[in-house]
Length: 238
Length: 238
DNA sequence: GAAACGTTATATGTCATACATTTAACGTAT
DNA sequence: ATACGTTAAATGTATGACATATAACGTTTC
Image 1 (tube, protein in one colour):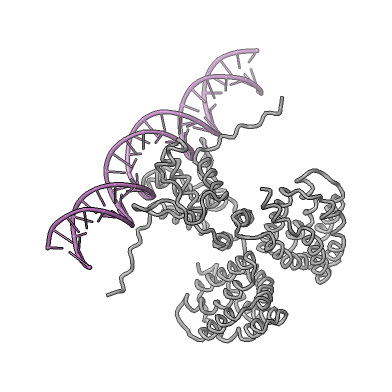
Image 2 (image 1 turned 60 degrees about the vertical axis):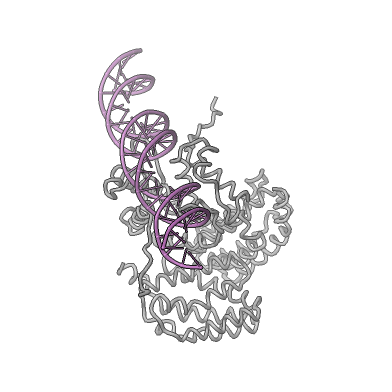
């Protein structure tokens, strides 16, 4: 007699949300497509406008659609990017769920792998971009431009690793360290003098997987050690 | 004369959303706390109930609060977990932004590192849990219980690595492979016979970092090779 | 003809009100 | 003390009205 399952009183707005979400996931609506207008959804789901609107709002908050007003407006399926992962990582850090140290350690483990993969997949085009970025590092600008220039190489390598998941989390980590550095604003030339990336780039362009890994690890140890203690200072000053 | 900035017509509901979000991030409301009721928020923000509700709905969709109905109901600040990253990874996969192969490759690179760290930080308590989980693997149940049992060890190791970021992404990957396997439902005893984890566990408990890395890498190569081709079949059958 | 301007149509955004539903807590009768 | 009904406080849904944003179309004006 105890086999009865609880009757889950699912909220109408959640049900609409789920159905729309599934429709998107199934490919019935793909990036750029417009979902039916509120009026149409009201008819098809036979619910009130309140319900439809809350469902669409949820889709928007989840990053699945963007809502545009006006005559040609509506809810358009968003091109899903990996930015969400980055923004979530930001949230987690600022909610104190990750320490700066953990982020640095994670970079220390992941980025050498990425550098190795980048060496494996290096093309002449990427080699050119790497050399360009390296040349630009000597410029010293204001925050946050400096941070951007100095981390450009890291972003490039992330793009080169040929694995979108690794690209995404690596970029998240780089961006997070960068944004913290921007707030803290240490003397960039001290903690990250230009030219630190030479050996990495050489190995990557040469296609030397192990060498790239090694060089990246050494670089991060240099760099991150210098940043040690930055978190406490940051958490104090904010 | 061209210095005028565009006047961004921010939507009221977004504004409320942002203020509540900031309040949570700043710690004014922490996990478990109840946000003011709709009635109170209406007064404080001087907006309609529609606006307040849509803002709260967005918070819920973003995973920042859970909404409970009833007399003692309301919007309660959620303990921010790393589940968000997992759910994002799910979205990305199902939207075709990541291939199964990429996920497997990422696991192949990350999990050995995690195993190594687990070996470094292994405690007697964790050792006990590992042995228990290992003993339970021989049971064969239905999907998705079997998958849960067979991946238990992996989850444990993820918890042991002492780096919440790595824990999170590792679990995301494990969970993703698991959920895909659950849909595809191959013969578990074939692709993942019990006992595959012995050498890993031995190395971890012995505190042998390099050995654990090595063993995990070998295990994943065995396991993931067997899963090769699963994605195409999956993408066909659904 | 084309640029400027007003009009219109079609979306979404907001407000207000009423009622439904869920849920805990309290009181009361058995 | 248990069972039951009542009440109160919250969220959930429905509906109608109006506000606003935006593109497209027409119309005037030069």
